[in-house]
Image (tube, rainbow, N blue to C red):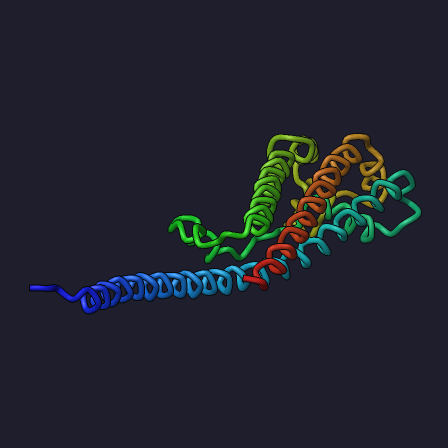
Length: 230
């Protein structure tokens, strides 16, 4: 009994084609799911970094103001009688403030902990995110340094010698009557080297913080540009 080859070949081809089609559909479906997941991650990250970049812009402006004021104080403190006491107090008060930047990274941190960053295949994007994270870590380090100046460094030594920082900056809190100074005593105080040194120490931190904030802003802008192509 002869077996016809044509039907067997046709049936075999049909089976192979159906298997290939099934694999193709599965691959298409997985690719589509990955694409949708990547789009969701990109949209969430974009929301984080848009808000963060706006906050960075505000923080940079504050850093500029702090630097301008501490710089002006360092210049005017050589001849305090030439400027109103209120003006000097406003300027030196900048040594007690900071840019106060807090990023908005809820989605970013969630993706880090869940491993969803694996869907990002763009090397430039991961590099930009790494640059941002490096700058953020540097900013946190500078914040700790600034706190150290207040509680262990130059500002702390100044506060300890004066009894209270409100001698220099009344708006910083209430001043006991036994620490209050007349205009002449105040002018003599601001010419002291320890006051100059304390303000200079904080101004140096403000300079470094501003540069770090600018680096974060640059990285955020790059991240947003690359996310727009995801």
